[in-house]
Length: 388
Image (cartoon, rainbow, N blue to C red; front, side):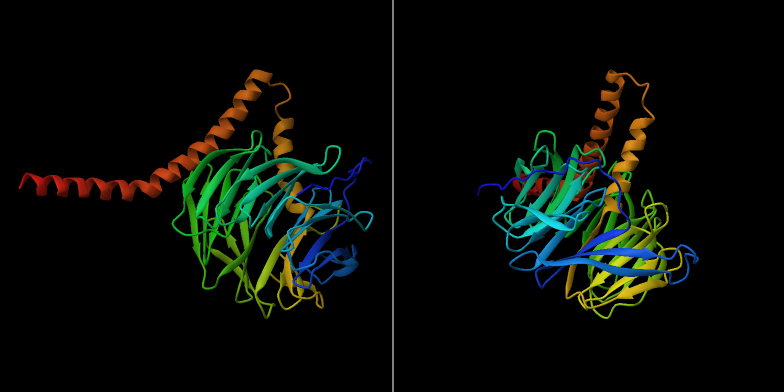
């Protein structure tokens, strides 16, 4: 298909108040803003949810959403195979992207000018908004379809999982496969931590957390199917999990449960982290459920701050904070290396990339070690049989 291009915003980017987008089975995308009373303490119910807009964005269910770091741009994907772009600052729909031939399963921005999309057709497309939104690269990623993708904070690497049961590492600079490993179970979600030093792999009721060396840090097994995860804190020291049974739980980095939050009657389809206001570093957790209810949670106490309903059957939620925290952390690392020579800077980057690759290779060796042992045993048995 031909790609529809459009001009991107050229004005100076300013960060907006706490805004988020919601997608539903009813084909709609809604823009919301969290309003806070600054004179009341954070622990109290001092926030309310204000609706900015609601539009029937697609011909079928909205399956994925992503927000840019500044909150200005929101991308929505659907089972109608299209991607729509919205300017949430000016509250208008301004573009549509065509390139996939299957359901859009995942979306993620890098900065204000790049967007990655994964689809049921098995491909990942890199979209560039410099100066117009168009296809910059296309990857044949997974047989059967892409289920989830996550961009490393450097913007040079990405992880993806698909229906073929593989976890794959991609070099986004060349649109090529850097490494792949076969998982024991099909994973439905993969996600880098904000600092890029670890990643989460979700499969049914299980979450495995690996460091960049491929070593297992923790393994969480829950009693219900996991539908959504989001790291909490600047480096993801804690993890919020939404489940099919309607529960929202928060886990510590060592795999212990901090608290379980009850509020939804039906499955929790989406989670996102939102800053209380644009001046504050304090954050809140927002969850969306198939019951049409949105709940804003205090991540320190696990208590409900505010809630709202009537949004339809929610499928996905996005906010700018996840993207901006991840990329600002990487940006802060760059600033500390101002006096480093170009040669040394290249070495640092090469070491970072090779560290991630070696970690995946190490995991592959671990996964297949039992298989190689069994093959050796079979050869020994065959040799003994032939000698007799």
